[in-house]
Length: 311
Ligand code: UD2
Image 1 (cartoon, rainbow, N blue to C red):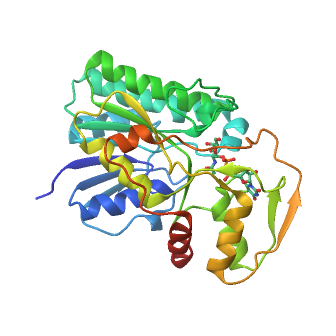
Image 2: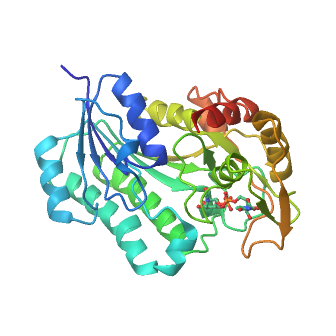
């Protein structure tokens, strides 16, 4: 009845739930494992194609049983302590979740020779750290500075090299600054666009750290989903890491200006001093992803417009 059996860890989260939406349209049978530490149950679309387990990926007994019983075609590893600040507060538990739990999944696949069409791990542009070279290319030197970045980088290597060593089809992606519907603005360390949206909706003050001339590669979540689907469905694409962004560099000031036009009212701004550890400029080289057919469909104005409508 269904096309493929798909596991999405972190499926109740921002990016995960957008992926679920797409997988439902594609006719897949989807299993979500999410402990709702970041994600929300109401993010998950109601569908008879979806089975949801409110479980931590660190529950290895549960994960092993699930993997052995279901024999998934595709696995998307999106569950994580998703905040850098949180990882600095809780480095050890971050490591258990962001690295060990994912390595356990790989190990289970290896040990029981589970058949699999593709496993995709979500890493982050955080792995580039303070390397100032722009645009950031996958082969550039990494500089993981926080528990979050260290675990993302190390797990990327586990995923790719378990793939090579044990012939498991794997890929990893490095997300740049993803924004869009269901991004959770509840922490001060949430993505800046979710925080600007909160301010815009409530006609509240938005705080810019620094002069607002810092730049990022803001990528709309639907483009991210396009990349994830491409990478999993291309059978000859494996054992490599891909930047996921737009290749366009936008300053925070430019974002606020564009958003003011979309919201059709001023977003009052105050400037505070720069955030410690903030990087000044960031933009992805996306030629590896383009080479397999990826084309970002949402420029900033279009993406922001869609996001605004969803609020
Ligand atoms: C992103 C990721 C982070 C890590 C990092 C790697 C998010 C939410 N964070 O951090 O996990 O991968 O990239 O480089 O995707 N800002 C304000 N006011 C606010 C909030 C933020 O001015 O209220 C500034 C902030 O100081 C920074 C920029 O906006 O210069 C973007 O901040 P962010 O937290 O959205 O993302 P970033 O790139 O620092």
